[in-house]
Length: 237
Image (cartoon, rainbow, N blue to C red; front, side, top):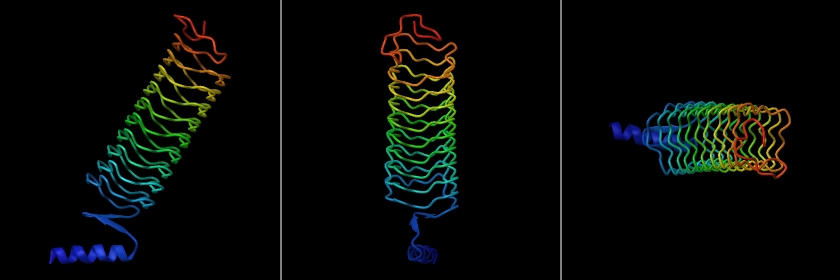
């Protein structure tokens, strides 16, 4: 009897254009926590406002999916295709995005505090106002990513590619940018207080009004192409 009811529910959902995996009816505002949806093919799925805490979407296809306001705390999105997805205002605290494709995604005002995004692709993503304090973005590709007014204090961005990224007014204090590629990045009015820019490439970057108090610039390539000397703190010497 129970199996028959489950099958009836699945068929009804399919008729309504919804997707059902296991016990999860994938629709807006659904509660689907701690489930294994790894490898699922769900392009364009609407999960606005959904509670997806602890759920695994590892290696899933989620191109253009809608996660507006969704709760994805501790979710596993490793190697997931989220290109063009809407993650605006989503709670992604401590979520895993290692190797994920999040290019051109909408992450405006999302909470990425403590999230793991090593080797992720974030090119042309919009992270305006996002909170990513303490996030790990090592080796991430973030060319032309928008980070206006984003808060990344204490994040790990070692060897990240931020070429031509827009980081105006961003809080980048104590961020580890060692070996980062920041060519032509717009850092107008950003705070880099206490940041580690050792070996970073800032060629052609816009640094008008930037706070570099206590920032380490050892071996960094400055905006004019010269190499900063050993002991360059707060200024390229």
